[in-house]
Image (cartoon, rainbow, N blue to C red; front, side, top):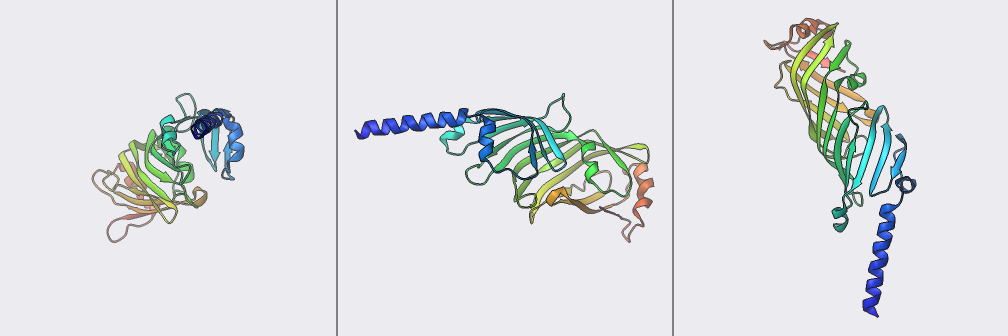
Length: 247
């Protein structure tokens, strides 16, 4: 009797698991408490493979979200989802990531995001009008959400062909790179100071995607002439010849 009871219990367990996996994703979402400012478009498919037409949080949005459940992760009792979004035919960022820890602490790992540089500048309160060009690559090794922005954040941003238009003149900036970290719930972006601009800078992204930044521009032989000519708009140089950059 005990043997048949165990077999029946295992069968029922597998059956219920299959029902859950194949349940429509939009039904499951009714049981999930989402952030109040997160807006979702049309949700289709099942937990096994679902699609979301659009997701928007504050001013940031992504399209064509595709989510697949890793079957092997169920055996480890840690459901893992492979996420991809965007595409060549839609506006907005494009990329992929892995989400796990849903039964403990949800986290995003191995994230790769590519987006237009021009989508970043509207968030920055810069002293002079600037238009950014080309694409930015974001690598998220690990991200865990926190009360403001993050609990954990490890990654890097590369703007490989950085260029901007300043005072109606397009200027090539070379390569700019930024390390990502988390401090007191805020995302910290620290610019690698090995760049042609003589730029040393750290930016903070806080709750509601509010941004602030502080750093310096130090003229050097590699600095583009157009940037050098715009330095007076930043004020006077300090005793070390640096121009304060703050927003």
